[in-house]
Length: 372
Image: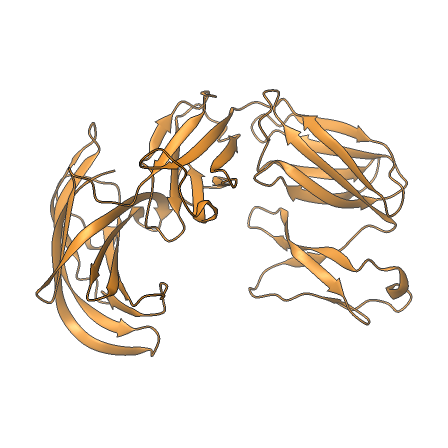
C-alpha cells in the first residue's frame, strides 16, 4: 500500500489492517508494517481489505462489561468524532475488549447499538493527546439479552489439556456471531446469544473434531454459569463399527458436533480408530436424526487414514465420489437423544500428499448407536 513521500516521516511503524466480513463489518486482521515508501502486509485470501489510521492519531482502550461484570462480547461498536465522522468500526472480541486508533485532540464518543432492540448507548470520551494512549477501563453496558459464564472441563471434571484448541458455539457450529473462544483457564464469556425468546443451544468441541461436549439446551434468559464436559471416548452405552474392504476397525473415539445449515447436513459425527500405527477418522455428515432411511443427499461420509504427525489433507483418505452411501434402519429417541442405524457404500482410497488414487470400489460398512 503506497504512501506519499511527505507522509512517510511521520507515519506510525505499524497500522491496523482490516478485512470486510460478510455482514458488512470491518474486522481487525493484524497489522501492516511501514516500509521505505509503503505499508507492507501479506494477504492469503481474497476479500475486501483496508489499512488506515486517523491523523493525527491516539490510542483508546476499554473493556465493556454487563452490570453483572461479564464481558460484553461480539457486539458491533464505533468510535466517532463528536458531531463528525466515525474513525473506528469493529466488533468486540471474545473478552469484550478493544484498543483502537482514534483521532487525537478532539471530543470522541463510543457508540454501541443493541442488535436486538436498536437501542444506542453513547459514552463520551475527552480528547486524547497525539501519540498518547488512554485506557478507559471497564465501561458498563446494560443491553437486553443474557450473559453467562461457560467453563470447559474434560469428562472427569478437571481442566482439559489444549484449551486453546477448544471452541464454543451457540446455536450451532457456524451460526452468526456464535463463536466463543476459551480463556487460558477454560472459561468463556457468552453474551447476547440471540434476539428471540427461543432456547439456546450451546456446545464445546476441539478444532480437530476429536472431542465434544453434549449439546446443551438452556433458556435464553438463563444467566447461570454453564459447565461443558468435553469428551472424545466412545461411552459404555454406545457402539460404532467400521469395516473397510473386509478389515474390521475398533472404534474407540466418538464426537458428535451440531452443525446446522452445512448444506443438507445438521450434524458432523467423528468416530476414531487406530490400526497398524495409523489413525482412522470417520467423518459422517447427516441431516436431522430421524427414523427410517436417509436420502442420498442427506448423508455423506469420508474416512481419513493418517500416519503419526499427519493432519487432515496430508495423508490417505477414503472418499465416496459417486455418493453410494446408504444409511438404513435408523431410529431416533428424542427424549434419550439416542440415534442408531447402519450404513454401507463403496469408496476410493486416495493419497492427498501425492494426489493419486490407490484403490477403487472398496466396500465400507458399519453400524452405530450413539447419544447426541
